[in-house]
Amino acid sequence: MAMDELRAPACGAGGGDGGTVIEDLPTDVLALVLRRLDGASLAAVGCACSSFHNLAVDQETWRGLCLALWPSVRDVLGCGGGGGGGGDGYRAFFADAFPFPEAAAAAASESPAPAPVPGSLPSRLVSAVDLHHCGVCIMSRVVETDTSSAWFLGSPFRVDALVQEGFSAPSPITPSSLTLSWILIDPASGRAMNASSRRPVSVDRKWLTGETVTRFTVMLGGGVALDAAVTCDDRYGHVREVSLCIEDGEGGGVSGQDGLAAVTAAMAGARRGKGAEAAARQRYEEFVKGKRARKEWKARREGIVDLCCSGIGAAAFVGFLVMLTFR
Image (cartoon, rainbow, N blue to C red; front, side, top):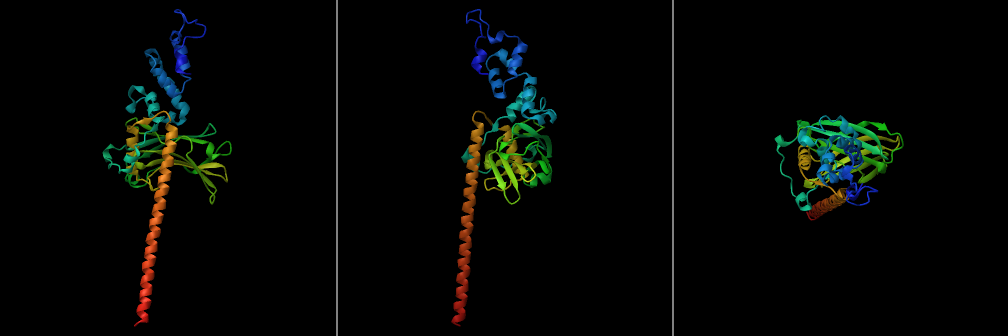
């Protein structure tokens, strides 16, 4: 429903001074109307006037929106009330989790990220993961990760929502028709962030193993990417693995400590609203292009080094033969 429609007189009002405007409708009717809006429209309506604002901050409305988008959030304790959201509850959670995180500018992303302060990093992360196929939810689960252990901080950042056991969907899986929502939540602060691109940014088929990896990547500051991947087994038509990693511009893994620092900074940073999905895909394509260029440059450099070593070896061998000849 458009904002102009909300502000316009009701049908049949005649446009005179005695016309009925939408604010004259009963509060419960207006509440039912507002509950049919999506999150962005509901937030915009709340800015129209004070009466709309009071209806637009209704927690039950925002709770319904959150649960419709992310069924797994139902199992996350405290996401609708406590934490950093204050009295806003589900509304603050939606504002954190729905938009994409704003990646730093390219110049800033090329500079090394500051060393993280261990005491400022969350000791626990909660992942609310919802996987849909053709609009039907086929997996919904919550994963808790202990991020304070030395094993997590020293190993490459990785969170598994599903591994090895797999499951079969009601219909054959088409990887390009998958949508993934991966929300990372810090229970201590109540902050959350969107860790997946919702729609696939790439679909890669491994012909040797018969698997297809569908990626839902989101760029963060510091030149790193949150890489959520869904692995499907084409031979049996089921989902084998759902995981979240962080990789740098060289294609290598990022340690748990550095990855946790990047996630914490993204949670506290700005969010991107209008046009965010297209911008996120463009940033990912630039990231892949840069990674490919660096890989090619590295291969050329290694080829030159190998050629020089071969030349030096050949020259040494020829010199040795010459020495033997003239002895």
